Image (cartoon, rainbow, N blue to C red; front, top):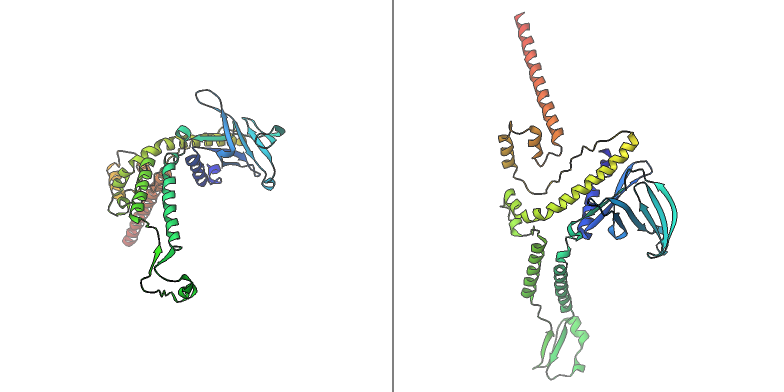
Length: 353
């Protein structure tokens, strides 16, 4: 759909999912711009929420968003917009707990509430389970950095029989030389950094973070060794695939609702029903053994349709379009062959004459 292209839906999808992974929920709002084009943008769940009915399907009844005017940052006056299935109702309120004052209402030109609310499972951020471990890791690392910084400001300890007033500290600093009476001991008062212990603790915390988050460590030798095949790497990422499956399912449902709302507006503008013949596919960014895949595709030729075979190739974005290109290429090659054959026959006839 053209409406997806001029909204830069790839970048929008990234923002939409990123907010969901951070907050456990994210919102998307559709609106009509000054050029009468349908737009959609991600809205922070910290300044918006949806109101659903109590039916099994949980239909969205209202969507609420509040904000301050950019040039009124010091003001306590907030603006609040309520989106229903037919219109946008504008309010103002003094403070977040102040009374509402109705300002105006206007139609939004969509056939339903133009908002999209996306929840992760249990409405929890994927980082919530490792938050304490991350804090412990950061605290350990910060303490180590502070100890190293404090090492440069260590105290010099001089012990023995000497008169401190006879020591010229400025000359010592300039010449970087210490001359002390015999029997005097000079040393730095420093703290034992225990590098090995700290490193072991950091490695242990890092390993637990990846394990609990169910995410492989891509900086480990298993991935950087250079000898692992695409299939082997895929097996190592099975746990993460399992974790991603419900997120992908929820994301697919949210994208389907977006398309449904946009198609409703396009149908209204065109005066005819627009069929939502759009397939949503998610591609994993996983190394693929193209040699093995090509061999498999060639063996299935004639058993499975060409379009299905092309859909298995990671570098083919549109299998249907690619199948048409292959068909046109074969027809073009056949025409060239036929033309060459006809030209050869004509040349033979001319020789006989």
